Image (spheres, one colour):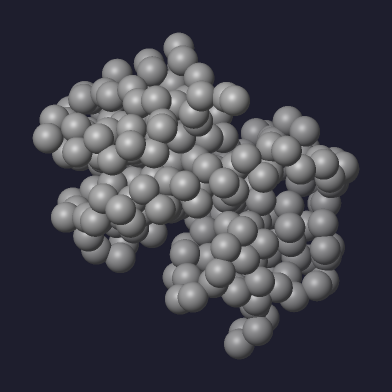
Amino acid sequence: MKRITILIADDEVEIADLVALHLQKEGYHIIKAFDGKAAVQAVQTQTIDLAILDIMMPGMDGYEVTRKIREQYHLPIIFLSAKTSDMDKITGLVMGADDYMTKPFNPMELVARVNSQLRRSLQFSQSVPIQRSILEKGGLIISPDQHSVTLYGKPIELTPKEFDILYLLASHPKQVFSAESIFEQVWGEAYYESGNTVMVHIRTLRKKLGEDVDKNKFIKTIWGVGYTFNE
């Protein structure tokens, strides 16, 4: 049976030790890092199955660590942070995190979220891969195998969630997707009240595509319904 390794990156040693204690009881192998650079180095040099990151770390904050990780890896990332505002949470998700918990936290809830993310990740890796073709739409080329996007030959850097939203819309042109549908298909979990998360991802996606605020070439808003892709 494969040993599952979890990275805990937090400059507060007591919190890192507490999280490690509860996860070790679940049988997970733990690697700890106490600053951002050490966290990135751990991911680059060892096989990490999931990362739990603080945001406010010395040297390199959690957002930058996530950006570095997402350049090469698709492992689940959970933010565990004292930053509690809705905008902090949305920023974390937009940067590429899969979940966000605030401090103080319930260790057993964190364990449950870790188990959920690992279960989803394992199901994805073991499932029969769906053949997704390269899409070419008005100068926009979306390559699922390379997980890359170019616009008139210029590379567009997207987070995994932004890429999945774009591919979902572009592969179903003229079909209107509600925020609920987008969230459930891209995040793979129940919607609840996650409309702002989808809206912020759409907004940053449009910005990266160079879309005008009043004239959206690729992603169109159908007011009161959802979003669609202009073919």
